[in-house]
Length: 477
Image (cartoon, rainbow, N blue to C red):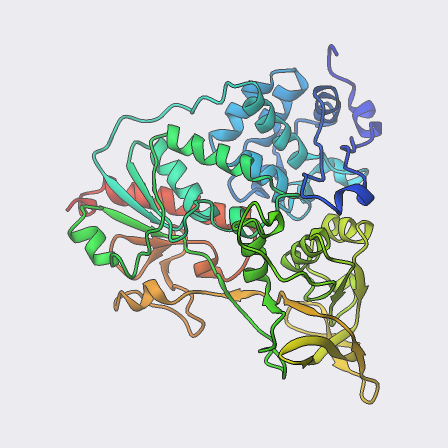
């Protein structure tokens, strides 16, 4: 491919659709569904970019990737250079290229999207990151000289990893403390293999290690060490808290204590982190359920439903959501994938009771709903339709209604302020500084459950705030 097409030709060029595994095949395995772009497809898609002088797509990106620049490198066939540009601001491009909701962020602001489909920025980002990894030239970007400053990162999810990568590039000594036996946070235990293969996460973690980041697993801050002990005894000059929101919410209805009722957190962790799907190679099985109900309409509900469908004994998965399809917060791509894989949807239906026998789930009683006036979220509020309850026979229920924060760290630090839900309060949201001197926080522990890329954006803001704090006189011990 030589030269660049005219503007009119770019507007007429259709968006490249990547290949996917056949639904009838993939619903029986955990292989990645999307196969990504070939080099030829990537260049064709990159040539659609108009190279705007004031690119709104960059402002739509929480980590401010220089999108037109890396896209132009792909158009020119300079794939490794494209990856280098991305990694200057995004330490996890192979992850964000797969799971970031680009349609609501960078791609939402693409000018071409006004007349046609926007540039497939996420798929191009994934392509560049994958190309770099498979061609064995994923060298770290330039790192500043050592500053002599030491930063502790609590939690190895998206916020912590983003902060760690940026701080390491700025020359600081960085140590990540992870409570579980595997680093990666929600990237490892929450997002299924068929959406985000774990070797991809491990590769991104290796990249951070090459930047100089140290990772300590099986290390529960708040029990093994307090924040004060990290700073006063272990010599850390600053701390970033990125522990996420991992305590599940439940319905509060009769029957939630039956065997066969799971939170989505537990279910996905058992499958993704503990390999329950690969029994007996891994001795961490899940009971062989045949008919499962998933309660919820977000991305976690989609992940739970699609994961359940892939387990060996599953015959049927029913997703129950109290609003309509148009009100679902899940990404449209995930909903379409779930439908293609045979997930049944029961819209305008709200669970009232989980029934059981001999201690085990045997059904869920649902109340039909209709949509009323819009609520604070902007979506129409579900209102019960009396007198027409139905019971759905199932032998397992997975509850995916969101999650709250673990209060362990906050309880170990009296001067760390939290709100009524346990979220850490910030003294300066611009740099994610908490009320406690030298302590910063970001991601779900501050905002509640949100997206991977928004957590990464918080980690990036905090890294800049920490760097400024450490380089000023009051940042010295």
